Image 1 (cartoon, rainbow, N blue to C red):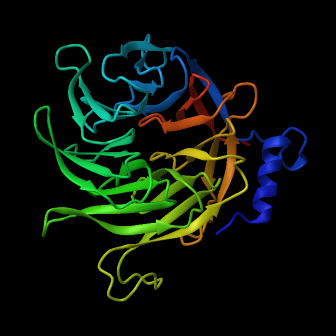
Image 2: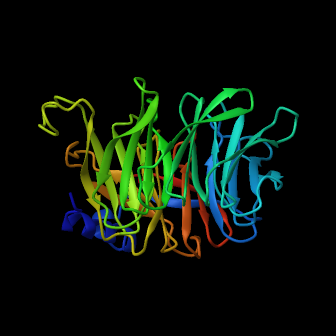
Image 3: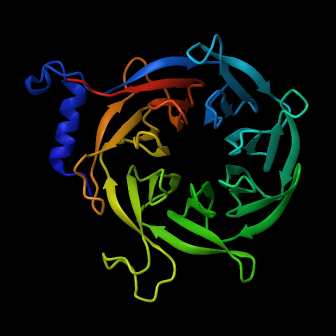
Length: 372
C-alpha cells in the first residue's frame, strides 16, 4: 500500500507551516528535540547500540574504536565517554550489539572478525575473536536466548555461532542463501528465527531444522527494487520493517497457515510474510537503517539525505493495509550534516533515540508528542 496523496499533503503542512496553519494554531505539533551531541569519534560513526538496561550507549566507527557512553550525576545527567575500546580490530568497526543479559558486547569489523567483549576482569576486554568470514563483516546480532549469535558479510554468507561454554563460540552453520553482499542480520524478538537483508534486494528468514540440525531458509521476501539495508521487528514479532536503497520503507506482516485472509496455500506449514504497506516519496536518498520502538511503536529511519525521520501508525489503521504518518524529523540546524547511518531507540525511556552519522557525531533525540 502506497501513501495516499492526502497523507503526504498533511505531513508537509504539519512540518513546514505549523505556526501559520489555522487548524493547528492551538496545538503543539510532535517534534524531535535534540538532547545532546556526543563527539569524539574520528571519522564516520557507523552504529549505536543501547545496553539492555539503558545505562550504556555503545558507538563504533571508522576510527576502529568502540566508545561506551554513560551519564554523570544520575540517569538525568550529561552523557560522557566512560571507556574507549581500541585494541580489538584492525579496520573499521561496522556494528556493535549487546547480549540480552548485558554482560557481553559483540563488534563486527571490516577486518573480517567479530570481537566479544566482557568486563569479568573489572575492565572491558576482548576475550574472544570469531574468525571465518572471507570479507568485511557488516552486521552482528544476538538471539533472545543469548545462546546464539549471527554475523553476515560481504562474502554473501550468514554465520550462526553457538555459545558452547564460557568464552567458547562454535560455528553452528554457514548459510549460503544470498547471491550478493549481506548487509544486516536480526533475530526474531521471541523465536529463534534469523532474518537477513542483502544487496540482492531480498530479505530471507532462517530456522534450524531439528531433523537434520541444519539452518534452512523458510521465507524469502521480495518487493524492494534495490539493496535492502536494514530490517527491524515490532515488539510482537508479527510485523517487520525494511528500508532500502530504493528510498522506501516497507512494512511486512506474518500470516500463519490457515489464516482467515487466504494468504498462502492450503498445505503451507510455514508462515507467509506479505508486504502490507510501502511508504514512498518521503526520503530523498537511500535509507540506511530502521528502528521500531518496542515501547511506543514509533518507527525511526536513518537516511542518506542527513535526516532522521519518525513515523507513527494512524490510530484507525487497517492491520492488513496499515498507513503511517511522518510526524517528526531532524532536519534543520540541529540535524546531522552528512549521511545518517544508524538509529536506535532507548530500551526503557520512551521516545529517547540515538543516531550516528558520517559527520562523526552521535546525537541523542527526544520525541515529544503533540499536545492541545
